[in-house]
Image 1 (cartoon, rainbow, N blue to C red):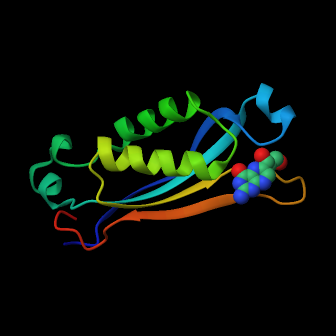
Image 2 (cartoon, protein in one colour):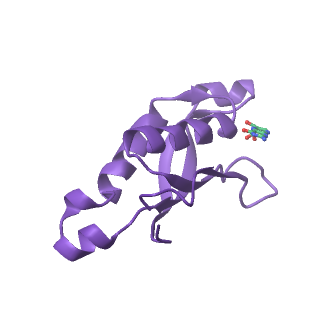
Length: 124
Ligand SMILES: Nc1nc2c(c(=O)[nH]1)N=C([C@H](O)[C@@H](O)CO)CN2
């Protein structure tokens, strides 16, 4: 086990999200901050993108998925994206912060923050 992480900050996507009627007919910006456990040593030793989490492929997939969804709560989307990362990319542990910066006029941001998976798993 290592404490290695790949970090993606400020990943933006636009989608339909919200509980109010006026939110059902427009797209709003969401922002992802991700921290993904992975052992970077095999990739570092070989300089091979195939032996690490490709943050470009992963980011493109998150944006594609998010922009295809239509939920009321940011909680729902956060759980779905975390599950996608665990199943499609075999991420054994992750933290995910999903922000909806336009949600509250008197706040600069609102967000949910979750951690999923096993930080002490065998392949991290
Ligand atoms: N815990 C949550 N509270 C609220 C959410 C949410 O997704 N999770 N959403 C809203 C509205 O959609 C809000 O973003 C509109 O400004 C309210 N509370």
